[in-house]
Image (tube, rainbow, N blue to C red; front, side):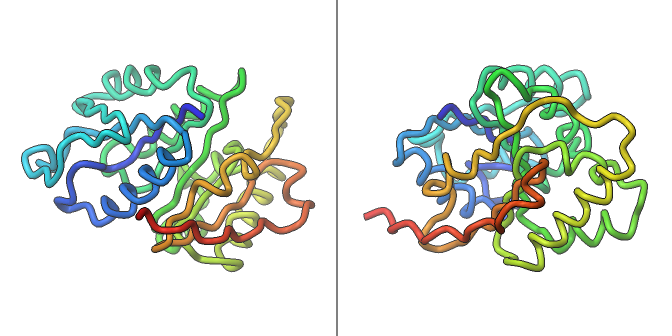
Amino acid sequence: MNIAFFASSLVSAYWNGAATYYRGIVRALHERGHRVTFYEPDAFDRQKHRDMDDPAWAKVVVYSAQSEAEVLRTVEQARGADLVVKASGVGVFDALLERAVLDLQGNGCLVAFWDVDAPATLDRVHNDADDPFRPLIPRYDLVLTYGGGDPVRNAYRTSARATASRSTTPSTRARTSPWRRIRASHATSASWATACPTAKPAWRSSSCARPRPCRSAG
């Protein structure tokens, strides 16, 4: 699969605790034959404090995040990917990215939200009916989280159902969960990911399976 990944940073752990997590995930995807382009903003002086060069197992695109127009141009570069991932906590223009990546859906492209801090995200959307991410949840083909198990899965399903029930313009686009296509690729031996499709009829299907841990790179 050709995967476009929008997140905080792959090459710098400066004010970015998720860096090592992303490195494990992206490298594991590469080792399983997937091609990953990692889009990260030039923000928070992370590029000045890199702790690794661009890796051989991912293409890194550092984009300017000085304006919405620049961010949208970068998102457009991901058009044509098989899977587009928007991770939580990019740090700049998160709300814009969460909306913009959904415009890439269709023509074989699936869009996922990868939540690396699900308790914070869910607390925010549950306590603020006007949170901009809340109505977007059921539009994502898949939500992946860094752990959390059933409580997180159920909370995301509840949010998706509640939002969809208020919508007056139901989607007519046919959706299928990409879970089976990537279940062997999205966890490393050091971390678990919890997957939950958000689109109908996934709410009524059997619960998402927890993946087996992948062997560590040797």
